[in-house]
Length: 155
Image (cartoon, rainbow, N blue to C red):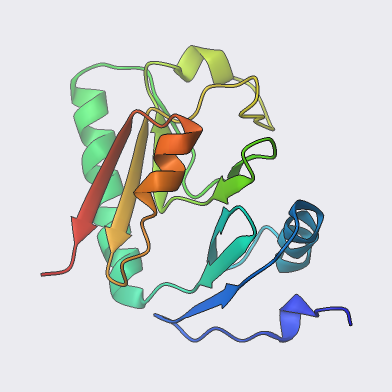
């Protein structure tokens, strides 16, 4: 049976978890979901999570991202904001889309690249996660070598 991912509806603030998803299935699901979507994914050794953020999440993401950008500009640091780019490493069977991310120290290493490969390119220097639904997956970021994760949690 073939899974038609576009038929899965994930209401805002909700999560769908799929188990026993192979790497090839994960890649096919990413293609099916497309680039312009509101959902975020996390993949960890066969477990795929698809989450759709709440409007409150998106507002907080923009505020925190803007704060980081202003801070970096005031410090006169070169940086590259890559938003919720999909980061994945097939050899580790891990993939994730942060709420927002920045290349700062490694900005020059990825400058001008349209595609990143974490087997040769460095991970982002800073990842932002807005945790309204407890989905930040620090263990995936750690495995991928992300040096800094900032989390904003709902109180």
